[in-house]
Image 1 (cartoon, each protein chain N blue to C red):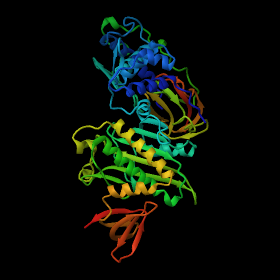
Image 2 (image 1 turned 120 degrees about the vertical axis):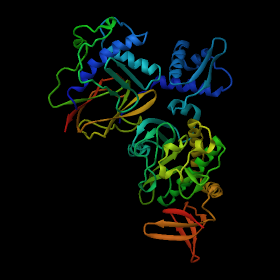
Image 3 (image 1 turned 135 degrees about the horizontal axis):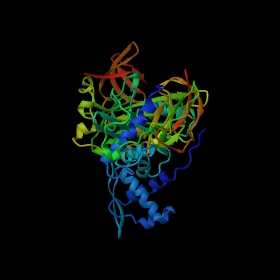
Length: 335
Length: 189
């Protein structure tokens, strides 16, 4: 174990940003901040100058105090925590990496080391971001939200699909809150806008026979990607929030909304309210009521996607009239 | 690990630092000997102005400093590299700049150092309650992450860059490290 000493500058920045964020229109007095944090006004001023170097536009008026005019398009741990406020579980700790192979890999290490659930790892870029079935996930620097969340749910392994459902609903809500766009969910793990993939969820589970040990929710959102960031072969099937909206989206705001919805949904799940999530999921799901073709391994199932069962599996009425329970596979919509 | 690389780079930086002094008004001590501190000043200036790259080219010489990535310093050295360049007189480099540079003493024949590519805080684990990436005795390959340097509030994974076995953890967890400061001792494979 390598305990990390409390970093006082980080704690101070967190408190300053929290105070500034709490007064979006007004000013925060340096004297009040100093008193509240038990440090000198000069020390506050030093931290303000440091934040300005990160790109925070903080105005200072001798009479009124400090005001946050604008924030940079960066994912900064202290600011994310300040904006998040308190959560029950998800986002209790946040780490931001400049570049990593895959955020799921880092969380996998945290999970093995016994780190408590709720830890969130973000990366500005990933070199080996991956989707389901080992597919590569394009994650260029500074344009997206690539994050992984560690959860230790009290669920049977067969119920773990519920977490993918939770993540899809939370992500759809967060996108709606931040952009006004209403993404459609494609079972089990994609979010689409105008039929093109804008976000994906990769749930990795480690379980014993009767109990899940941990689940890693990997979430990738194409936030501000340009068309040229997408490989040519994906341009007709993938998109980004910016491409759909026409303007750049505040990544920090999107992440904070996502973590809030995940935290709230996770708590509801723990209280036995999966039905609520499933209902919202069904509302947003573009797969239900449609004819689908599902390939699992060498098998191919055709039929109408009828509903979601209690565990989050897809129930498909086949051409032969019986109900098939689908827990994975490649789903394509057919006519 | 290249034997020549770091030393040559340092000499290179010295001259470039002198030129930077010329170019950037607030450079301290421009008419005197330049040393490692002056390189740090450039890096600090980069940090202050949120610059991720610094490049200076003058009369056939070129220095390039990069921050915030795994590969942090690269320098293009022209083939006909002279020790004392035809620099403006104001920034003449003293006859023997080398002694001013804390070049590591001749090291044990079979050990190499993993040095910090940036200024920041050294962490051995990806989170406060996670285990260290490597312990003494750990076998690493060039892609192995050995630690994190936190700079500008962002975690930067540092890789071993060469295969070997970690023989000593030199830097202290949670403490600030300087550019070029040794972090680990490694026995090359």
